[in-house]
Image (cartoon, rainbow, N blue to C red; front, side):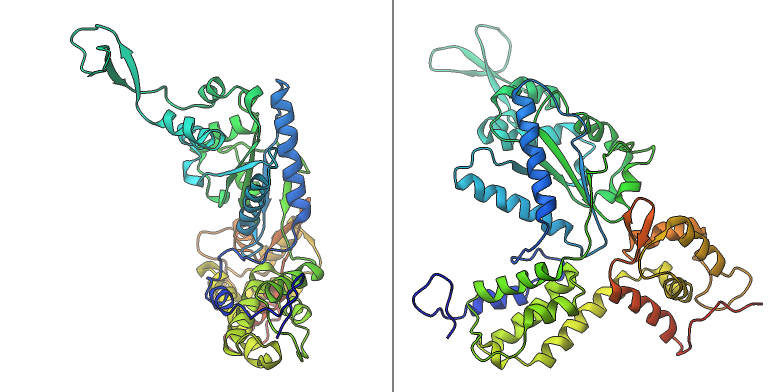
Length: 433
């Protein structure tokens, strides 16, 4: 029987928790979050500064933060973890803890919706009342429909002012705020040009309110929001957080957290599962999550005894999850150009490469004068757009400045093998006519 830290008696393995975790979806947030402390600390500190500035009567411009990364890097999980920690801080009477407010990317173009969400977070009762029809006294104005109160005064329903950032300031002056608002928007790579006005007001600090916008999206999000249509190109170097793999010790901490919180019986266990799953996953959050799900499923079968887990079963299931995730990332465009993609990644250095070099290599490898399957670019897609497509699909990710890399070694290997294995031949160079 396993012993839980701080307890005098052995704890029974929590099979329900293990079963629930094993049944989680591939992209659902993990309950065993680890790492990303630097990003959370930076955003937390920015929220504190925004509150201090607002209460002093000074707005804070340029507070927008961008979290970007390839699919499965843990962007949504990071947003959820920040909200969870701040909600816990509030219950522990940390009055200065920020409050997380989620707005869907499709709502960003509507200032009224965004302002109403913030109002409800600042003061739930007042915010709710803002959205409801107000009743105002109408003393003796004949002919107007209304309600007669007990005192005989006639009351009529009138619409409240349309929610806006300036109306938000009027109702909630900056000096009255006790917590900053962290306004989170996920999937920002899908933002529409119509959101430009709201994004710009948020980035400029609105009318002096302590609201910190935190946008999250795929690895091409920085380029998307910097376009002329969206216009958010003034992000500071500290405002962009490129999420990559976890550190090995962070990945191990996540596995340890699952074993500890689920009171797994570790007596006689020979396998070092934190180390093994960290290595198998390349410390990539999505793959680590799936490896832990596979282990949790086996632990349900063994009633929580780690020594009885069949390692081969866990690792085969982990591999299956990873292969399925990679196949889902291969778009129809990448499928059409599978040999081109394979040759590109086989020839690029394993570290980073400049964007112009990658684009030049795509242009060199792509064949337009032959019908050889897999070597041509997708129809109507020039080489520079294909480069952007690879970033969007997570095959490439910005590392720093203008340098890009394949963020997961096993995905790079998958793309090379996938292009070669379709007909069993090596990749090599494209054939000449």
